[in-house]
Length: 295
Image (spheres, helix red, strand yellow):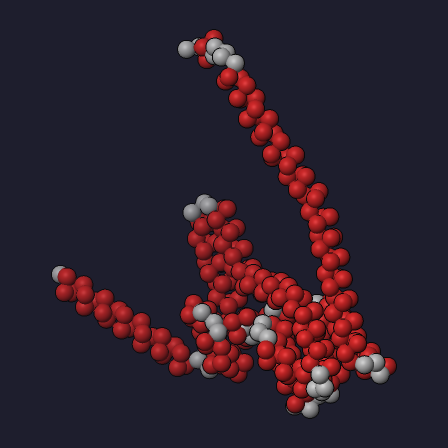
C-alpha cells in the first residue's frame, strides 16, 4: 500500500512538472515581460518570479482592460518607485491578474462559508496587494533621494571646483554613491551619451522623480545655465536651500505630531491612569466587598 501511494505521488509530481513545462512552452511572453524575467531574475524573489510566470499569459488582457490612461498612470508610478525588483508594467499586470484571481476565489469561498469579514479581506487583497509594494517603494525611494541629494551636491561642487567638467564630475561622484539617486544620475548620463541634450536629460530626471528637491535642483541648474552663473555657486546654493527646506519640513511634521500625541494621551493614557489609580486606592482602603458581591 505504501509503495503504491509513493508511486502515485511520484507520478503526480512528474505530471505537474510536465504540465508546467508544456504550459510554459505554449505561452509566448510579451517582449517587456520576457526582458524583465531575463534581466530581473536576480533582482526579484522566487515567489515574485513564480507569480509573474503564472500571470504572464493574462498580462495583455489586464492591460487592455486598464486602458491607455491607467497604463500610463501605473507606468509612471512604477518609474517613481524605481522599478523595484525589476518591476515593469507587464509584470505589474501579471501580478494583478494572479492576485485578483486569488482574492476573487478566496473571497467567494469565504462568502459561501458565511465569513463576510474574511471575504472582504480576500477581495481587498486581490484589489490592492499589487499596489502596496509600489506605494511603499515610492515613499522609501523619495525619502532616500531627498536625504542623499544635499550631500551629493556638496561633493559635486567640490569636485567641479577642483577643475573637473560638470559631466565628468557627475560621473565621478555618482560612481562613489549607492542608492536610488546615484542610479538616477547614471541613467541621466547614459541618456546624454545616447544623444539627449543636458537640458532634456535633466528634464527626464525631473519627470521620473516626484520630489520637490529634485525639481528644485533641475530648475536651478537650468536657470543657472541660461544666466551663465558659475556652476559651483549654483550647486552650493541649491544644497543650502534644500537643507533649509528639510528643516522647515521637520518643524512642520513636529507641529503636526503634537496634537496627535495629545489626542492619544487624553483618549487612552489619562483614562487608563485614572482607572489604575482608582483601583489602587480602592483596594488599598481595605473596603469589604462581601456586601456587594454577596459572598
